[in-house]
Length: 135
Image 1: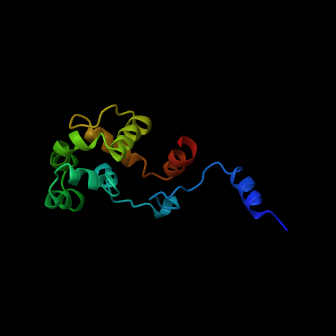
Image 2: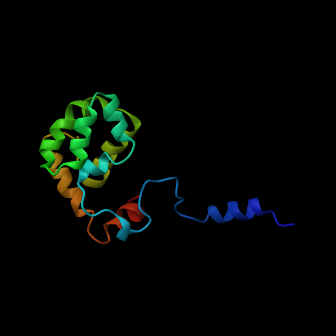
Image 3: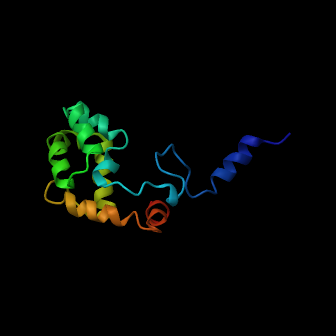
């Protein structure tokens, strides 16, 4: 009888990346095109950290749904970012900003620069570059 566990384990060990339950599209062409860095950051669990830190749900809704300048939406988030940035999800965003975009600290002084750099990652080929080459 075959030892399927060993066979599967040995095959998995040959893979460079294993999907560890990511909230990412499988293919670049499935990635949302009409979003900015704030919408991206708040699309997953970090939004709960901000709400727990005091961001009113009505303001959260405005931040992710209304079309207004990034800096104006950041001003709604920033007071709660000051606390939530130290959670596991907040740290992951800070690390991403630094490692992917060269932004040392996410704040009002550089949120527009961060957004501009983020928007460039929506260009064809950047998905692979970030997820396969960088990660």
